Image (cartoon, rainbow, N blue to C red; front, top):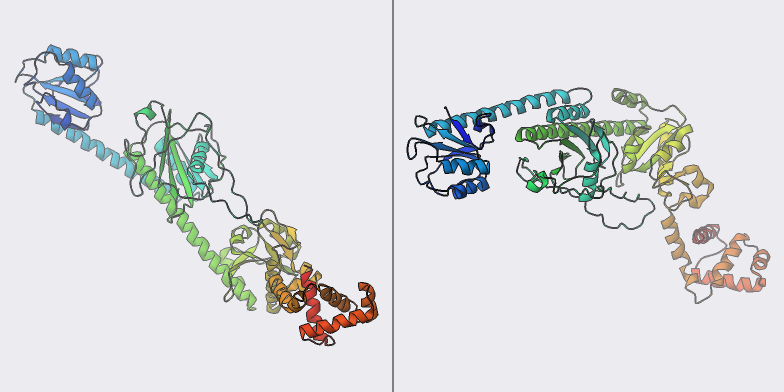
Length: 556
């Protein structure tokens, strides 16, 4: 098109004006065309109204962000006005001369073709990158391979984090400390929980280093971040005035926990020489993980497309793994049901394809809350078990010799049965023992667990006598109701103690009176009063047993 640079271009021809970022071509003969421009245009004019000093005209164009000015000669002016050349040179506005024989529409078509070719090239590169990411997802390394490939595609680093904010995989130079700190900072503070000894305290979030505060820009769900859009830094941030992040480089792999709470659909962090995008993983409302990508330059639309494609592949892999895990868990629950019904051979046939094996006899049964299943699965054959009308339990079968060790690793309240075999009556009995021991974990004297629970063996309950096998709350309610007539009898608390001494002495008046330090006639009077108030015959062995059980329950 024989366009000749005349101002605002280093060396006047060292490089073409069209090397600058041009969004579109506009034609205007207005003295002030800026109200009709958006910025980034290549403005064409014949200078029909140009006379005298043009510094204000050029200043308005520069302020609007015009990419360059083309002046058509041979219509109103035989050459580019010297005043315009001087103003453009001083303002740094690229100015070139358009020959009379070059139509403005030819320039417009040329720019349009260049933009279309550039967009096609970007789409082609995005498709090629998506193909490479897809092939990486099919490799045995799965999600880790996708992260490694993504880092190469963006020319930076990438990292994979679990839902707790722990780094599971990261490429060299990943600034994971900044990512974890920012996620922790954005989580809303949790409500103070009611103190419970069986629950862990949430870990304190990590914060960015002093002097390097992060200013993220959340992205609306369903929108892809674009340069200059909600996730890109503003001019101040590009100059280093804001949006810098804490955390060093050098392949850090540490990271504090991330508190549970709401997060934006995406985060973009920027600072001097680094730009980071963080996206959640998982198809539900609660993220099941995160991945982060960082580079030294702002991300282009193509790069954002590649990042979004990687997020889709990672989410798909995560959900597929979850589906497979749930299927395997259902199969193990079926195996447990078969074992309890006495079908050991069939249970082994079902378990074999899953790659699991049953422990040798003698074995012990462990029972814990359903949330302990994930901790027990790597240690033993474990499955969910739910009987009619009850909450499901995590049940594990382990060799008797390692039962206590495995129970402590569960990091939760666990009940342990006595040794048993695979005979259905013995296995069902052991499961019942483990469930009873689990029910006794709260406030029991069992060994403390690793973190938030206790381990109670059924043998310990048997050592505590009959009361150890009964539900504590039910026994105490029974005792309160049975002894209520005695405790409500004015201030005569001596009736309860007299009854206790009488039963502990097996109904021997002299021994019981001596224990109380009263005359036996006084004791006889009190026992008659007890009989009247309770309406029960103290000579009946069954009545004595119930009263003894109630009195023992008040001691616990």
